[in-house]
Image 1: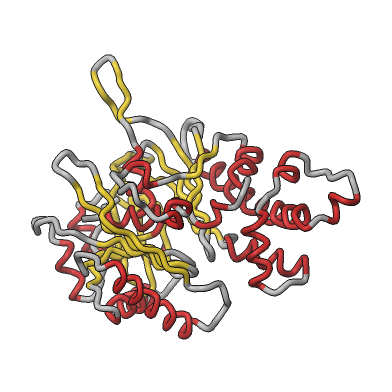
Image 2: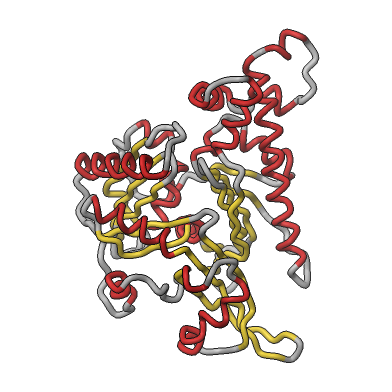
Length: 386
């Protein structure tokens, strides 16, 4: 999804001019625990090839923001030095409680007219001082409501200091910020790689389906409901990988690193997912089952939030639209059996999305990156924004 121009600093405005020639760009996903960088190249037939990618861990310790920022800059420098990417131009993205995405219906205006009045029109929908945010918009289409012509619009607001902080990080390592996107829209771009046409009597047509995408990050879960390739609901849920770890930490009286280790080691054991009622005392006392029990409780809370979002989405439509499947991405999607548990609770097919499947990739893709493929979804979506 291409948003209308944000009120970004002057040095970023120039990249939005539509008639500039396409230039290569790096997709840089700066997560709370990991850095992912992707460089792609598009051939004349439209196929994307993975040229280079990098992965850096930031560590799992909870430290003050400024210290975290210092570590982020150091690790980013290391990755850039090691991989020698061919461009310094960067697309990055944001999410969290300083980012607001709203789907609103404005009176019918042209894009130019809305751009001039966006601050006035948006004020009722933004829970921040309108002077403290940068705004962007995208007009989805026209509709008539109670005899009045309106347009359905995606409205995005991001705190200016959040944008400036991201720009500072990138510039400190010699990168050139070109595009600042939203995590959910970067994921939507990545999923375009997987949208295959279907054969019809009149030729080929785009696949029509409604999917729920759940990006399970460390600090936030990005939920997107995509209808026929266009996002209709975007929501950040603050139950994510670190939440899972903290619940294990508190329940089993462990420190955070040990709880994280057990979470990654055991995940949701097959036995706990299949049969929540454990019968023998030996099974009840096992570390594996205890971790699974704790995880099941907190992941159930997350699934309830997802169900509420699906129900809200369906309630806004004249006819109920059936969700065809759920895609899981992000680091916590790598927990064993989590896809099976989601499918069991949501009663929907669930897949762990591997974005590399839709790229030409080198045969020697490092094992660590290949095993963590789903965490690169956002970075790949950003790299497509050439």
